[in-house]
Length: 199
Image 1 (cartoon, one colour):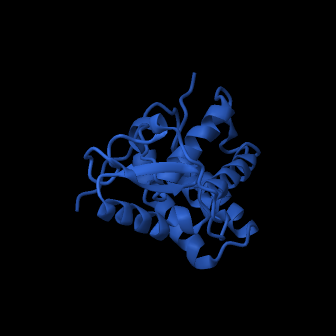
Image 2 (cartoon, rainbow, N blue to C red; image 1 turned 45 degrees about the horizontal axis):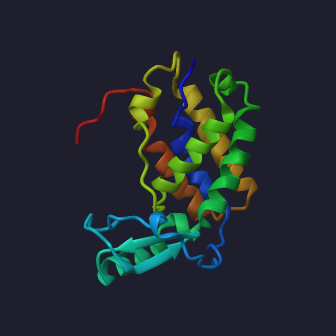
Image 3 (spheres, rainbow, N blue to C red; image 1 turned 90 degrees about the horizontal axis):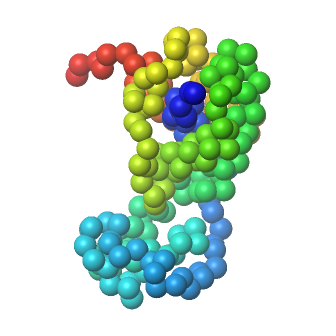
């Protein structure tokens, strides 16, 4: 059985650019104490449960006010946030896979894949790659693509073309498309398991 592949993930990273609007304000629901993190996501120290911030409906606690401020600024300045956060990534991944699964050059790589799981992992990966609040804990690009038979430049290009078409169809600004395509291109050697280039 084939494994879930972040090749199509990193390239889809760009797809989260589909929603140009910043996320709207969300109501701050009071979480149960056990739902709040015990370790500060910025400092790694134990939290003060009185110092919190809500982002996308989840409450995060911090060790000090300075760490809450750093977290909030990082969210506001992240590509993830600027592009619309979780809702944008969800929509982008769904649209992108519609194109990929219709493309005869690459759709066979998904024949034995649970697409619900693939989409979920893709969304998690993209959120982390664009600066979302939850870190990616899955495989790196090279490891995830190591066992894909026959994966080559044609397949990489097919994914990139589908990505670009998706972004253009969604009327994403050219400078954002250029940024996304640069990110996608930077994964080329890892996805195709080519030797790393020296600096």
